Amino acid sequence: MNNRTDDILNKTSLVIGRIGLFIIIAALMFFVLEGVTRLIQLTYSRFSPAKINREFVDTDDLRSQLIASGLFDDYDSVKYKMLHPFLRHTYYPNQNYKSFTINKWGYRGVDFELKKKDNVKRLVLLGGSVAFGYGATSDETTICGYLKQMLRQENTKYEVINLAVQGYKSIHELFLFETFVLKLKPDILVILDGYNDLCWPSDIVAKDRIVPDFPIYWDKIESLFAGSTSFGGRLATKVISASLVYNLMEKSAFIRFLKTCLLFRSDAPSIIYKINNSDDKPIIDAWVGNINNIALLSKTYAIKPVVFMQPIALDGKKLTHSEKTIVSKYFKGEEQYKTAMVKRYNIAADSMRKTFDKAGVLFIDGRDVFNGEERSIYFDIAHFSDLGNKLIARKICEHIDIENARQ
Image (cartoon, rainbow, N blue to C red; front, side, top):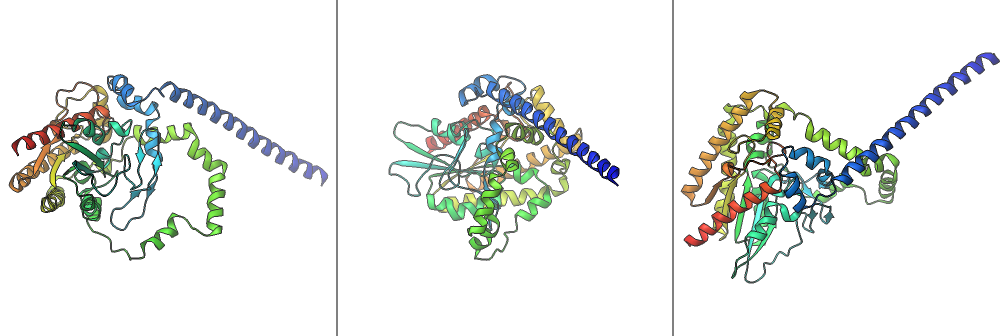
């Protein structure tokens, strides 16, 4: 009996010892990887708006450089209010990161007041992640940031406000226009989008166009999900936030880097990019209709609308080697879907042009905005570097100046 007990104890000790050894080895490996990751990021922590533009944009493999710099850690960390009755999600206000700021209103950039200052023209930008400036190295190197720099005239001061939110489509922009943009009383409204509406799956697009009928006691419902204000709820939150696992997930440079690499280096789910041209008409009509509603309402309120169709890495620019690699990974070699996406984009551009020429609304076809640029601009199929933001801002300014000259 004693021998059997001893055998069990010995085996138990052996198992515990092996588990302990495994944990120690795993911990050592983790700390080594953590150290290497931090060393790599320290090497590329040179990143600032100016240095990225000079050094990284000139390299062919732009995306790898941006990932290695740790830039996307900020964008992956931004906190959303995931529940909203009409807008799908919004940002929590007052967030500060190395590369961007979320202001008191829950939008990117410096704080602003509802009331417009005297002798100041106000420009508001609506859109999704491209207009938000996903991947920009600072608030100053987004499209809005460059617009601020470029729209400086001797006798006119401009205030530029970024109301773009990652993932938004035209239906969200229409609702945001009616509920918040009108309060700001802008002089110019720039609507910059296209990819989210046209290139996401048609079933998602269709669902997003049905405004959900949420109850009016929204704050109470949201509190159930957003966190309890009771003592027990606050205590549970503190215990979780103080836990080792939570802190490792939130603060580990290696885990953030690994997550970023998985998100940006892996092939995108092919369902997102399986474009079926039989769906073109309803999807395009819905997009054009929503943007047209925003534009016509803008004119009613004496706001000058400017509609900008964003470029994608499929049409216009001659792609570099790394940009071609990015595109091929998105479509996994199935060229028919790439062809279908280009066709949809072209049909949508023609529809936009006809609609807004008839309505007297300024439409800027941005598909050719990067033509002639030999450097890498895209780091995925729809998002681009600071240089891309600068070129788009310049295009918008050129058209605004032409329109002002006509008036």
